[in-house]
Length: 250
Length: 185
Image (cartoon, rainbow over all chains, first blue to last red; front, side, top):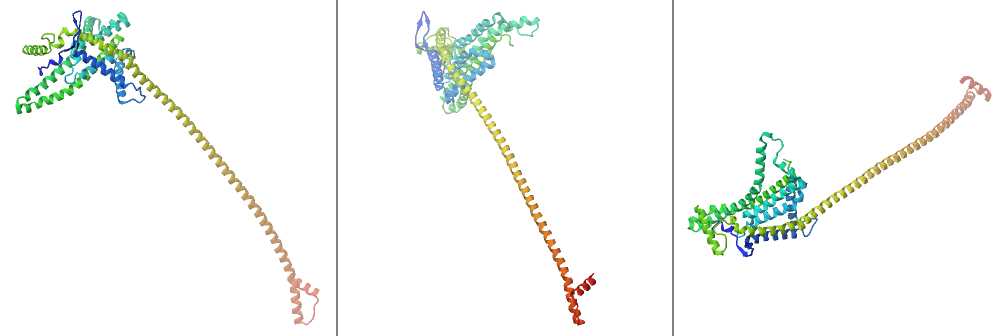
């Protein structure tokens, strides 16, 4: 059981709840969502409580996070996009911290469940649709009609554009989910090799050096992936929002 | 296929140990957990969004805004102070040039006056000297004439003495003088 690489994704009910036949128990996933929110909010509230003209280290870190996401959004969607800053900032921090929590042994990775990443990407997708149609009406459909394409192949191009637009929430959510899932499985598998090889005596212990090094390297890589996937998710969110704000812009 | 069975078996084992849910499906694809996850995501992410948009973001934006204002105010202040110091420096340079010019004029004036005074003095001295020279010259001429006049008397006297010695006769003074002046002329 200990070496089962899937076990870490198992939900455990901490407080079983049920309303109208729906299972809404408070699980380990819920626990880590709460932990993510409490720790991130707590840190940021604490870090910025001084409101220092000259920032402390923590405040400086909070400011860097702010400037990082604000810069990303402003570059991708212009200053108009800044009204979505609270959403983008919340998404980035929620995913980043949830991913990072997942790196602790025995901690649950919230973003390794597809329903969570689908929900987050649908939030973005529906925001894009809502804002696009609200701001531009049917003009939003210009998004599917690239300028400068010969009329003969236009139907084909439009079809491709529509399919790729509809595929966005899928790729958006699966990218994050699959990266977190695969990374954690790989880590667990290599770490499992170390344990099982070591039980074969001296030769086994010598042989377990390789997967051990692999596990160390993968751990570093997973930290990178945890950050990178949060970044990629946020970056794509910014680009999709840009489409909603400027549908004719590409 | 074998792997799937192994997964199923192991997860079933783990689930039975925990008395949990879901049959043998791969946990992330187990629909029975979706409702709970979604609900808790909506609750937690909703609270998180609320805290971020109402507390954190205005606060950090405020901090950055205040700092930007402060920096631009300080820059303005420093620009103003620099202008002031430039003006003061220019005034100082101007004053210095003025003072230099004044000092030069004063020096020039003093030199001129001293030159004039020296020239006047020299003229006076020179005039005095030429007066004295003239006086001396006239005196010398007078003395020379007097001396020359006396020479005739002396010559007459000497001649009288010589004649009396040689001839033994006495000549009158008038005769002697007439003779001497006839000879010397």
